Amino acid sequence: MSDIIMNKEQIMEIIPHRDPFLLIDEIVDMEVGVSVHARKYIKEDEYWFKGHFPEYPVTPGVLIIEMLAQAGAVCMLSKPEFKGKLGLFGGIDKAKFRKQVLPGDVLDLEVEMIRQRGPVGTGKALATVNGQKAVSCEITFIVADADNNKEE
Image (cartoon, rainbow, N blue to C red):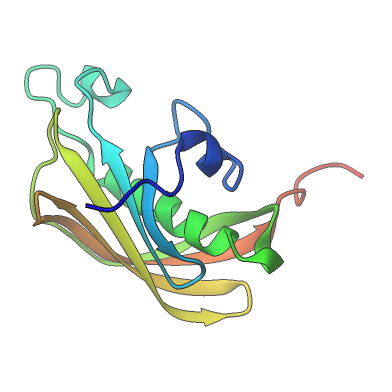
């Protein structure tokens, strides 16, 4: 098992997400701009379990894709030329949901960048629990200026 190379506070220095929507807990391995391995500890008191589903708590697949996207954003926004920028969704392709993610699970989130052209790129993403595939997809991202919507 890898050592932690980035904790939540360090992650928040790179991406703008904050609780309750910061959905990754740590980065355990990363080659900046190339690949990342992040982790999310699925706690029994996660906010989504109150409504999804009260009698049978299961992590929504779309939130797992968001976790993968946040991991990928840390990988790309760690590049010096993208410092202070935002990573936005450009698309989700080939999403497959194979295993339910339940309270107490440790979710390993891996993203490998397979294409990049300027501020647009695609990552091959895989979420696993104990080595079993939970979610796989390709995520396309766009790196944008953080101040796009601010008045001048």
